[in-house]
Image (cartoon, rainbow, N blue to C red; front, side, top):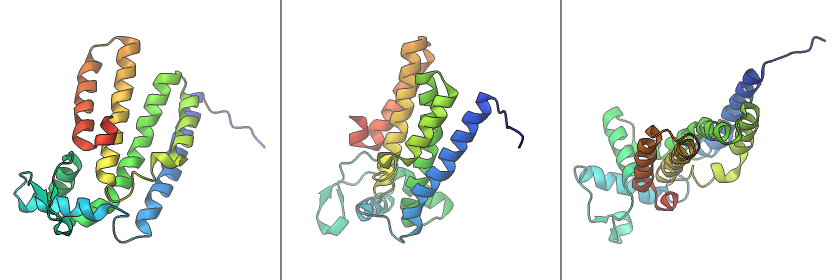
Length: 195
């Protein structure tokens, strides 16, 4: 049997591919097995519908369960779903189901970039990405109903970490802009991710 000698860069690409493929499987499986956003999806769905009915002006309260809950939540994910729903005529309910799995799958290559920057190794970053893809905290809570806000918040926070690391290690001032931009998007997305 002939031995396969792949360059290290190609091996790291294989690891990243595995991470993306199998990471997508574990992230999309709960979505495929249900027909409604898991757990707290109802609240965020109603908030998006309230936002659309208000003409994209933040309402004072959400109509969820007629409980007059103040509409005091970082609105980026809610706006994102409402706008995508209006532009592409996709029911917002479906967006609340599918977007968190898509976003958390896209987080895997961002994690690879962060790992490669920190370790300085493509192989270590590839292996770390495979581990990250299966780490329950990297997707379980993020793919649930309110996952649009959570997944966006953690996606942007990972980009903040990447650019902050590059800023601190390379001193390139362009990263200040990205840290500020993605940091602002974290705050607009999810309160816990902002912390």
